[in-house]
Length: 290
Image 1 (tube, one colour):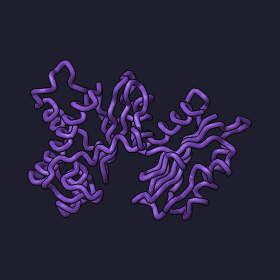
Image 2 (tube, helix red, strand yellow):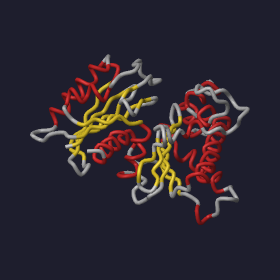
Image 3 (spheres, helix red, strand yellow):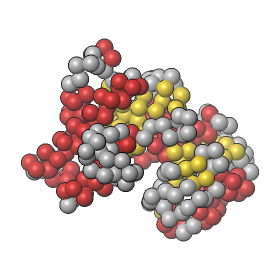
Image 4 (tube, one colour):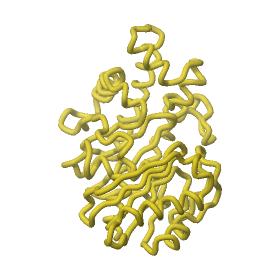
């Protein structure tokens, strides 16, 4: 059997699957209730043991927020968890006896959408998660592309305007600094959820702000198209719930490029797996690496 763990600041999910990747069980709990990395590992190991029946779990992937040390299997210092330099791979290996991999959560969500979601049938796909921040995962020639240092797909740190606002990463004018939910809240005084709800309700100022954010996303897609030449962009995360508000402007902006001819224009699709994408992708990565 296989297992995938999707570790977030709010929730942690564990999924078990057969060797072909088909899920047979899924459980979740609130991350803060576990208190510590060891408690999380103990809970996950107990759930895996409880749901595996008589089968042996051979491969497990943990999808976690960056930064992570892929080589040593260490969760370094995620912004939404009060944990630092946690050797998750070694800890879970000891607890389960299985082969364990650590992977970036956006990469795993992208892998999930590629294999079992909106990206099925493509070979070259870019997944973008758009919520509090902006992240991404790259599928090139049917395989997850993580780059020389495991940091490929940092879509949120594409520079849109070098004279733009300072991002938390230290660069100016990053895409995330313009359209990340946290930055939208700082700029407008309203949470992203409130802003998008107001736009849906007909507020003209809110709609202008939403269209501006969608236009910035479209500009990023132009750059990504020219570098990667994907068949499809799949956009997930909390803001994708307001798809009807952002999709027309994103597509219009992408199509406005005179350099990207219709024959090579990527399709733009909303993610299908929702908050299950990370665990589905983690199972797929466990299958690939078993």
